[in-house]
Every structure is written in C-alpha cells, then in structure tokens.
Length: 332
Image 1 (cartoon, one colour):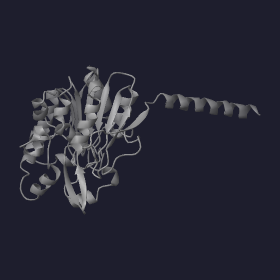
Image 2 (cartoon, rainbow, N blue to C red):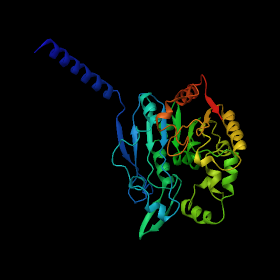
Image 3 (cartoon, rainbow, N blue to C red):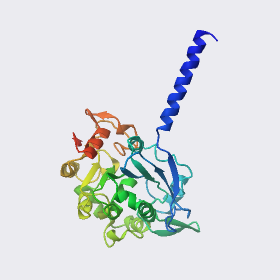
Image 4 (cartoon, one colour):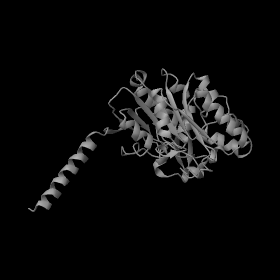
C-alpha cells in the first residue's frame, strides 16, 4: 500500500468514526401508539406519535400542522398521510425546531396530524359510505395523559405547533393549563384583536356548513362559543392562566390578511409586547416565503435559523426560555 493509499484509508476510518459518534449522540426515536379507544386517525386506526428520550428533565410537546378538511370533498383530496397513522418514527426531526430541541437534550413528543380537524374534534362523518373519525382532541388528550407525570415534573415544559398545530394550542389550552408554568410557541396562527373580530363575523352562508363539519364537537371549554374564541389568542390564554407565550404572526401571511392592516399591525405589536416575547415581520415586503405563502410557518424550516434584520428566530426563542437577552422582534 502506498503512502497516499494509507492516508486515504486512515482518513476514511476517521470519517467513519465521526459519523458513528455523531449518530450515537442523537436521541433514539420511538414510534408509540395511543392507548385510548377514541384516539383514532380518520381511517379508524389507532393514532401514533413519536417520542425522543432526552438527556435532561426538560420536555417539548410539538403538534404538527397540515391544513384542514372543511367538507367531504376536501377530505377526499387530503393526502393519505393526513388520514392514517404514521408507521415510521421520522416524522418529527424534519421540523427544524424539533431537531434543535432534541439536540439540546429535551425529551420530545411529536403529535402527528391524521384527523384533518385542527386537533380538536370528537365526532364522525360518513363519507362515501365509510365512517371518518374527526377525533383529534382525543389523540392529544390521550398522549398528554400518558405522559402526565413526566410533564408535571418537568423543569421546563414547552408546547409548540405550526399552522393547524398552532391552532391546536388554543383548542387544547385547558390541557396545557393543567401543568405548572408551561411555555407556548404558536407558529403562524394567532388571533390578534383584528383577526379575532373578523372571524367572529364568519357565521352565515357557507360558514354554517363548514362550522358543523369541522367543529361538530368542540372541547368542553369551547362549548357554546364561536370557534374563533378557541383559536390561540391573548384573551384565551389569559383566561386559562397561561402567561409564557411566544406568538409568531407575520404580515403577509395569507391567514392574517383580513381587516384593517394598519390596525392589525398595532394589535400584533400589542400582543407581543404584552408577553415580552414573539416574532413578527413584514414577510411579504422582505420576500420571506415559507409554506406556500409569505411568512407562514417559520419553526419547521430554514427560516428558524435564518438571520433577518440581524436577528435569528431560534436565538429569540432560546433567550426567552433561558430568561436572558433579546426575546422579541417586530419589523413592520
């Protein structure tokens, strides 16, 4: 063997060792199955979730998003992965925030989205002769109950989600509020005063059927209310005594383009300053695209790490959790 060949061989061994060491340092993923007979995906099968054992007593519960089915046709057009349980454990670490928290030693639970109901339902529909389960609430409920002792004794407990998963933080605020001093990261769905008031007016015409289809049986703390009152918002979290909230709600997000935009900006600023934490930019003006529209979902992709206006979203979140440094950024 020549000297060059020996050097190449040694280098290959070193690289292989480095890869093995890197892999050994990663949290081992476990695919777990829900235990409640009501915790079912839309196809009637028992729901699954991903669990990663950490190296600390800190916990993250992350709820995945993925749109909604507002009627039978929309359900028929849903991708299969949004209607049936996952059969692999790799659906969590693709979310950048989740991967980061795992690397930081957090015990992590990733709640999959297989019910098309914003993780809030407990009702069924008959579609094409088949029973379709909108049992999102029962899945969240069962997973939290399964880990209740660990979550109750956590040093830091963080609940987070994006888009439909962010909405789920509102519908399941009562479950979150049972734990002492929880942290909430609501990525790309937040009802400031303007956004809330606009949605409270959505009651007539097609909204009657949409409301019945999606919100056939809302959680008890939402009963008798317009569904908008149970979306993540300052009044909702205040009602439940949840004080540590990090809203991510950008100008340009297609879900926030309703109502007076100047007033919208003022209300977003008011909410973020109230919590002393949060992130809001004019994503359209800065051409920050994420999931399809400007600024919609930032914790699940490269924007979580991106420097914008000299600020990194990831750094703000960790400053907030660690109680030091800059914890909010607003640029409209």
